[in-house]
Image 1: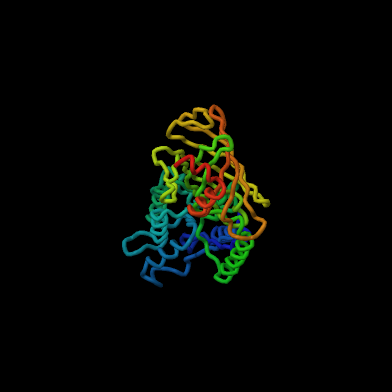
Image 2: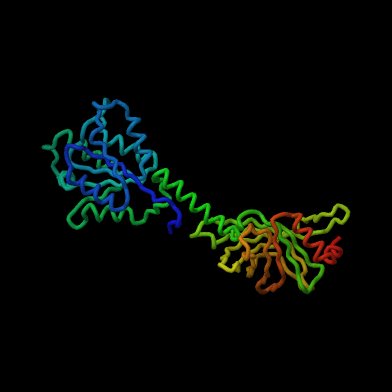
Length: 350
């Protein structure tokens, strides 16, 4: 889906063919391209006599999103090495990984079908040889006309991944609109690193800390989808140093996909891999993989950058667990929260 504030983008296709022929076919290609907001780049005025630099053509191909080759019965004008300009253009497009469509016109198709090619000119034979080296080409027919072939070519294309081009003033205007939207929805921007703590209502000695990396594309179409990558560690409290020391050998990795709604309710499924066995409320929890549910709440009542969110975790059987999660933008904020609200828990893990 196109972002609400994305600037209107135009795309371009380099059309390569011998200009002296195929004028009708070229017109159909151009009309079909424009239906898809693809601007044609035609080289009928660019010949060996007007410029000796093939680098100019290479630059135009580089700047195009697509390369379309029209093949008729003529090989066309050649460079100083006897290679046609169209063949050089095609070779360059393929070598640089350009999305390419080759179209075989009726006049060339008839020549290719000939069993006896002895009467063909050198130019025609070279064009057939050029066509035969192309790994995949579409033949234009009454049942498969140019507009239909162009449509089939563009059908699987994700245009958002194409570079395209945008008028500078449109791009600036769209960026300003996006920045205004982001400012108005700051409370939903959760991307970045968070420092969490897992606690249990039934076991005052249970505490796990770690980090969560949240990925979020912050625009109107995508901000409600988030991805979490987290680490949990067993932890001890250093009262003298006033810090939490995490046991790097006793950890759990987890990932999850989450959705957030307009009310700041965030829900998702997580998958975890526990690297050690331990106890939770006197229940043995073996190492291994498991799944579960996270149910969070984010305060979006005031449009400020969120510094804190909280929720619950529910691990599935065979080691069902239930507890609470609190997440903060900084380690110090997490420690201050624990000292103020869970001082007894910290005393139990010294």
